Image (cartoon, rainbow over all chains, first blue to last red; front, top):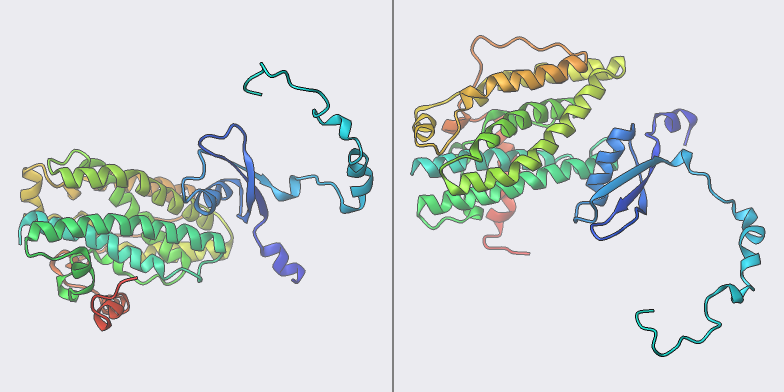
Length: 99
Length: 250
């Protein structure tokens, strides 16, 4: 894509939807829109057509700071061999319900 | 044909024909997102049309279904306004058409909610929420295009000029509707103009656009089955499958 066309493309927005029974907004995808107001409307049309949600957030994709694939080893591998961090090393008394 | 059946056909044909026009934007809108937005608006209108045409068929009492009315009537039997049959042309013309029609349709249905006819009141109750969104969508685009670049401003102004001649017909009342207004069935469209002007003028002001001049003798006749030339082509495209394969189903 040439720079000229890239500049004329609408910016990308990340869309978060809270479903009727959900407590938090979940990332559902992304879309293009000329500005925030139109991004909300496009999100309504693209992502809530089948009653998926009752609240929408849109965030400029450029505002998202993400981890880099290069940092994957130092960020995530150290947690891989620490199974004791999982709550699986004690017995649950039989009387305990609803756990 | 009863007056109620005719009134249901008028409102149903408005919705059906504009729905068909908006479907013409699928795969041709400026962006994928706009394809979906215009498709949604078209489907809302199609839903309104289905209920109204079904009701018209029942009120006629001749056993005609919504499909019979949509696919087997000829041009002179369609009672929609000229504004909804106007070709899409460019995006600005389509947005001018949507702003003008949705503003009118919203004001009308806000009154029909109180109709003494339960079917019209029911359709209106559901439709006002849909139409409020259609109008908002058009508001947003007319403001952005009008107050955008030199090119978008120029084309949006041209879109307004293109569609303005079809505005007057929306507010014309004939004897049939006057009688239905008396009975509390229909809403008096001639009373909607002030509200329509107020909304459209506010959008145009924000959009830095100029309100076009009214024509001395605006065209009309859609409610009597008199249509513009492009309407025949629209019907041919909409009806040919059903007429070529009678009774075909999914």
